[in-house]
Amino acid sequence: MFLVQQSMKPQNLKKYFTTTISERRGTIVLLALLFGLVSFYWVDDWIYNVAPVQIELEELAQIKKIEEAEKTYQKEIAKEKSNLFQFDPNTLEKEGWQKLGFSSKQASSIIKFRKSGFTFYKKEDLKKLFVVDEIKYKQLAPFIRISAQKELIPEKKCYRVFISGSPKLIYKGFENLGQIFYRNTGKEYQYYSNSYSSWDLAENQLKIIEASVFTNPYIKKVACNLKLYPIKIKVDSTRKAFIKPIKKQIVNLNTADTVALKTLSGIGSYYASKIIKYRTKLGGFHSKDQLLEVYGIDPEILSVNAGFIKADASLIQKININTVTKEELKAHPYIKWNIANSIVLYRANHGKYQEIEDIKKSVLVNEDLYQKIKVYITIK
Image (cartoon, rainbow, N blue to C red; front, side, top):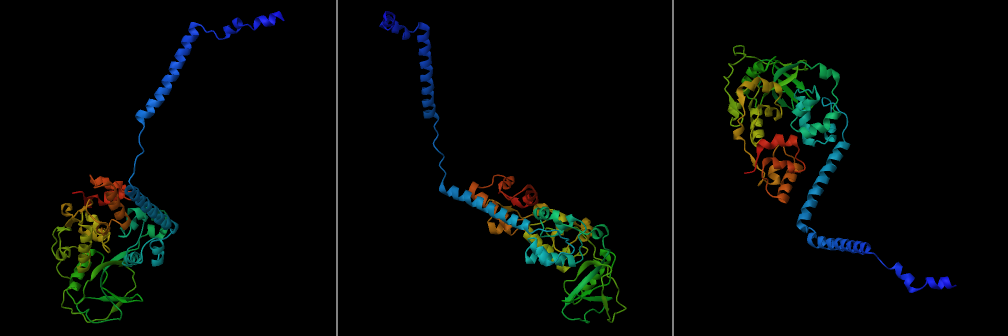
């Protein structure tokens, strides 16, 4: 009992609350560190606190418009992809082309182009269609199936002058034009000249027919075995079968009128007019190869005239992308409405383009399209 009472005295409890000098120093350092950390947290929050970025409602609305335009475009692409199917461009009818995403007018032009004698021998031939740009070709290429026979054995072609078409069979007006043939397509009677093995021979006959009562004749490449029937007419045996070819000179595609264009092989009044109309829409030619974009002009015409034409790119009428409207921009053959809308909308949201290449910042302008249109745009 005595021992327990002795241990509870204050002198014995004091030892539990007594610290050494080293312990006191450690406690002071620890408190200093804690105070420093708390102070740093408070100062850092006070110094570096950044107010939230305030975004104008107008900017938000514009951003939303861009996002909605992109969503609409993606939905259209997805819809087109869902309608794609394997097809042979040599046999596909108008309804099939429409299912692939072409308009009724575009589908009709493709059918007409094919009926003019053109045959697709490989997938890349689809690019020769005016209505098929690089983007559309990449979309359709995996679905193109051309029969092996057509791909490996091209059908033999000959050249005839297409003279005219009429709802009823006619016999007059062909005098002194040589042997004339006709065919009934079910919708009209079509009249052709004799068959020729080259453009030059057909061109001579074209000049004779252009001087007759018939308007807008043109050279057409058709199957040599095309079934035609001769028209019996009285021919003036004293008239020469051919006239002297016109001496060719270099023709500038960006300045030539119809008279100059008609000096080229296979180019009559009809095609000369179409070339000038397309040149106006395009703003000018920068390459001879662009002639192939004119409906009805095929590689044979370009090949036979290659040495007699040039395209002076310095004469191209350029589009100022910092001032052009969406309506004006979409009128260009290379720019569709959604692309025109994207280009103008980007300018409205981000200000004027500083460089021509900045047009690629528009969500719908890829590298292929940029390379195709850059010669036609300016920022001045």
